[in-house]
Amino acid sequence: MSAALDRKFLDQAFALARRVHPRATSPNPRVGCVLVKGGRVVAEGAHLGFGKAHAEPNALRRAGKRAAGATAYVTMEPCAHFPGKKTPSCAEALAAAGVARVVCGSLDPNPEVAGRGLAVLRRSGARTLLLPGFQAEAEALNRGFYSRMRRGRPWVILKAALSLDGKAAAANGESRWVTGVPAREAVHAMRAELDAILVGAGTVAADDPALTAHGAGPDPLRVVLAGRRRLPRNARVFDVSAPTLTYRDKSGHVDLGLVLHDLAARGVGTVLVEGGPTVHAAFLRAGLVDEARVFLAPKLLAGSDDPNTAPRLGTPKLSRLGDDWLIEGTL
Image (cartoon, rainbow, N blue to C red; front, side):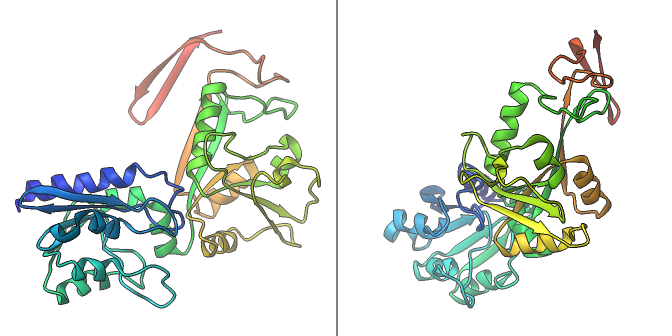
């Protein structure tokens, strides 16, 4: 098989995996598999949900006897058996089906598996190839899984909504709503794709947020850093719409590293840190932010008591200046 065809069919496997919702397989990774024989696709499969069959068995079931002598293109190294594993080994399934060659985009980052799946296949007589150039794509597809396996903590995304003058709230502390409806809908969709959402006690007390996906998809686990502060028992974050974890510390300073380690142990791979500013600063100081998503509203909150009626730019214009952005417009 030529290098160009290898890339083509591995791209196809990645496309299969990307069609699966990020939360569907959590805490396990999304994986796609394409079986090719004689230059033609004979079957394909994806891991569709936690506890369900993995991508390789799904593809093998569809291929039947045609799997013998085929090449399997898999986004990540087929899994090997290890103590405590609940599903059968995909590497052993491919070997038993007589697959002649396996091409994958990345080794499994799980230290219990890394390299062992490909070793199983080589012992069966199959040729294996870790195709260069797909590692970044594999990690982007399952960044939470890679982060948990490699660092023992989730992938952390800091999210903020700010006015043009850098305010997250009006002069009186009111923060609803800095951004408009489309931006808020985008946040709801973001929450639905991530495992957990985290805020501090100040945000719960000031805004009483529900911290749900508002119907955009599955609700995330809600995490509150309470320290030693008392929280209102009737706060919406404690309703029954989604589970909530509260972390407390008598000193008032919750150890963020320990929180993330505990969340990873619970299977949380991605965390959206929504705030407030004190929590944002703590995560940044600790070097625990992997990604930032900042929503910028074309309004000026300084001196205003209502974010909804604050002065805003008319027909804002956006220009890029090197690594910076210029937003201009009339008031």
